[in-house]
Each structure stands twice: as structure tokens, then as C-alpha cells.
Length: 219
Ligand code: SAH
Image (cartoon, rainbow, N blue to C red):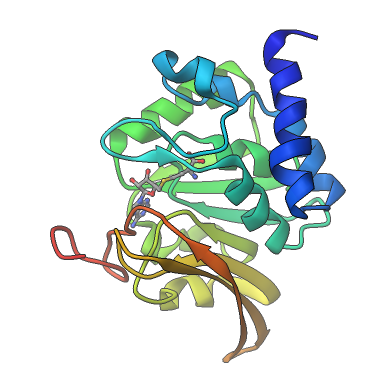
């Protein structure tokens, strides 16, 4: 095993499984995705630390434990269609792609779309589909989704995302504003207009900026 594989295995054991994430699909996926390839070159030696890291344009690659917690909360069995809002580095989409059948990933900043695309292509993540645009509107062309994960905090769950969930589908997203403590929530679609909400804990994310979210310079 190379040094990064050893660090990756330790990350899964010490930062993720030890804190209570036990879904074997999530643990296996996180053992499989080379996080060092998704961070900026100069941060490679820090890739397996227990924290978020800067990517570009003030955005971050989330802390590994938080990625695991969010994906576990989606309750995937394998084979689903998943929408990932806020591609960022592409790391969470890569983890999802090891579990789901198809991953649709939306990012508003074109430089990050390109950053993630390079990595998906060189590592052959062929089941990840990318869109540059406002993910607070979802990606209606491919809806409905079995699961939706949003990696940026908004004032509330955007209505278009609710509408793009299958019946029984789950959405996980942080609610709140930048720089403040936010609440990670899961909504499960129980009926046409019926959603059950669970609170999963306090988190800190960059703002979701879009038509159904915060407006730029005002979050
Ligand atoms: N999942 C990422 C972390 C993303 S950080 C990873 O694993 O690295 C949140 C990302 O959401 C940022 O890249 C930010 O540009 C993006 N974002 C913010 N508002 C958005 C919106 N309305 N639509 C799509 N992406 C958005």
C-alpha cells in the first residue's frame, strides 16, 4: 500500500467509523476515492486531515466526516440516481459515484466545474454528469432523483429541489447563513406535498447562492 492508501484507511477508521458512521457502502466508497487528487496540489500532504481544505475561489472541500455523514443520511442501497448540488472539488460526487448508478452534479462557478471535470475524466468517473448553473433550481431534465445532497447552506430547502425528489426520496442540506452555525437537515418525501424533516446536527458550510437561496453579497 502506498502512503496515501494507508492514510485513507486510517481516515475511514479514525475520523468516520469511530464517530458512528457504519453504512458499509459509505465506508467502502470513502476507502476507494483518492482524496489527495481532489485537493489543490499544495495541500496534498494535508488531504487526510480531519478538516475542510481550500479548493479555489474561496470554496472548500468538505471535512471527510461531514461528507460521510451526509451520504449516509441519504440511505442509499446502491443503484440510485442522485443530484449533488455544489460540485466544488468533485470529491463528494466521486464518493457518491461509487454507490449510486448516476450522479448529476451542479456547480455555479465555471472554474470549479472545470477543476472537477479534469479529475472525473482522468480517474474515469464515467457516471458523473456535470452542469454549470444554479443548483438551487436543481437539474429538472434528469429529475426525479432518489436522493439530493446540497453542500452549501441556504435559508430553507429550495422548492424546486423538493419537487425533483421521488416519492420516498431523501434530501440532505445545511440550513442557515454563512459564518453562523447551521443545521444539517434531512427531508424525506412522504407524499406529493408531504415531507418529514429530521435535524442531523450543527455544521458550517459556504453559502448556497442562487435564485432559490441567498443572493450574492447578501447572505
Ligand atoms: N461537494 C464539494 C464541496 C462544495 S463547497 C466537495 O466535495 O468538494 C460548496 C460549493 O457549492 C462551492 O463550490 C460553491 O461554488 C457551490 N455553490 C454555491 N451556490 C451554488 C448554487 N446555487 N448552485 C451550485 N453550486 C453552488
